[in-house]
Length: 433
Image 1 (cartoon, rainbow, N blue to C red):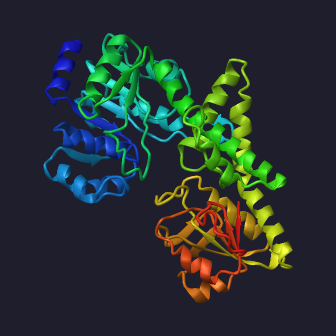
Image 2 (image 1 turned 90 degrees about the horizontal axis):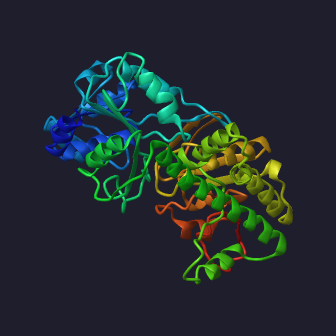
Image 3 (image 1 turned 30 degrees about the vertical axis):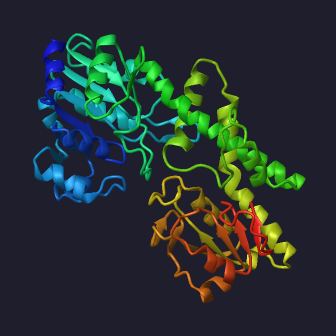
């Protein structure tokens, strides 16, 4: 049975359905379409579906011209009707995996997508999950759901996990240049999945099981949350000791082995780093194992916006001003430099904390002209000399490239440089994190 599917994949004749057209699904769909595969994107968001069919990209990493090219040629289309799955040879699931509560996974999007797939699944189909989840999800939850209508995994259909590794805004590594990890329920499923991804990605690494592939993704992201939490703790420690953390990091970087630099800041944002490690934390608890590193790191990172507010309060007190009466400008509200993405951005928490302390808060962000999220509803200010000098403090929360830092330096009364954009500048108005 798998020989037919292998041949279709080899000849680029396999029909692919991508479930979920977000920052993972759309780049994947476009990449396969560019290689000549017939791809249909499925999403419950009518606006997304319409934009794809109208040849308009809403994802930073996919230029509209690139999307328009494959749609115009008929290699890619989008729809909300999942019945098209009955014609698909390959189904790739790329849906969100948020948290219900701080330490509890929410896999409802995965289950909803799998139930929709199971209603139309035919024999000799490969199903691949890309959504980040805890180890065991593919085998323990997805397999039984797909088998409910009588088809049997590894006999009638194939099932695998391949973690997404998209880095939004990374111009060096798009989806086709990032090595791919794949793991199937069986060796055959893994090999089929490897063969599929090799059509768009040069380096595909096959692991022994889907569970190993699931764990790989969580190891990667837990490594980052732990090291970011650690460097934030060191930054707070260095402040207490009167040591320049930025100088220490630069010195440590001179070691050619055994050290990788991480930098302090307001914490972590986006989807992956704040939430994915907590999936592993939750799953480990089911086995009676308490991952102290993950929980401690998550808690430290979550506390950084409040720490920044406390530091600002100290700075203003030294200048004989009070936090409750201060006018503050926050520069940068996205979760990442030069990326138009507000998901879990710690800058938003910073603004909320400042307002809760009575501050009059404005923001400037070159990629976010208007903020309407949570309790925040305001426009980005125009960055000019008169505006800047009117604030008691300017906080550099995100180091966007398209910001006139010289103008800020020249006209600001006080700068709290959380991202070290001014480096070793000796200007007394600059206080580094």
